[in-house]
Image (cartoon, rainbow, N blue to C red):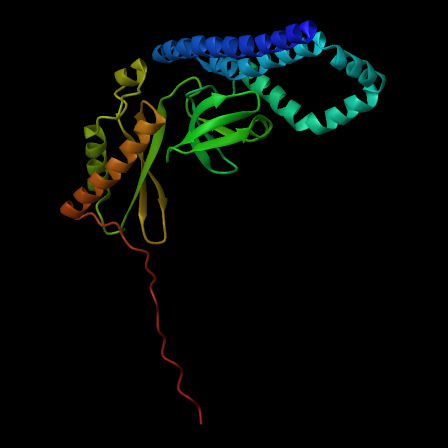
Amino acid sequence: MEIDFLYWGSVFGIVIISYFLSLIVRRILSRIIRKKSDNLKEDPTKFVFLKNSVSFIIFIIALIIIFLITPALNDIGKGLFAGAGIMAATIGFASQKAFSNILSGIFILIFKPFSVQDTIEIKTDNLKGVVEEITLRHTVIRDYENRRIVIPNSLISETTLLNSSMTDEKIKKHVEFGISYDSDIDLAKKIIKEEILKHPNFIDNRSDEEREQDFPLVSMRLVSLGDFSVNIRAYVWARSNDEAFVLQCDVFESVKKRFDKEGVEIPFPYRTLVFKNKPDKID
């Protein structure tokens, strides 16, 4: 009975120590992550990954220790060792998805196609949001409706991503308007430029050389002559993807109001129908 008491006391102690050790380490890493998040130059990705992996690692170690101190499990282990080839094949087949996700998570951490707090878009599924967590198994993305998208690491490693935060967060946004063929193109360009320059999210991204050569703050091009409209595109810069989106929406609204006020038409699609008289019947 004394041996059993010592054994179960040891198992209970290992579980309790593992739990509190996991809790303490996760709290320490959470504090580090908050500090790294406050400093924009620091990338908290590795700490987030480690925080989400630490419980798994600690409890696996605890399980191994319990296995080693349990005589019955040692006997089972010796029996399993005899059929290690079959067991390894079975476990490998059953766990290949799990191992694939773990390896993909490690590769994401090493090669960093994206990091925590990056804004990414998955092109194949048209999903877009901010990376919140990278765990051993999956990546969590918070979309713009505040929902969480959970994607296995093996899948996200194989898909095409658009990363709006890698290297440089500044965004060059295309703001396009269609005006009628009867409207004044120069007036339309003047209105678009004035409304863009008034917006607080617009930034001057010209180099020193471009400023010296007096490059325009807002570049505009007539990009196409459509079936019913003349299409003008403005190229504007903002500090981030979110600010660029707000700038685009606000400029659409303010330019539309100016067009209405100053007589620049945004045309509806229309078609010209030609009716021809039928030829006289020959008796």
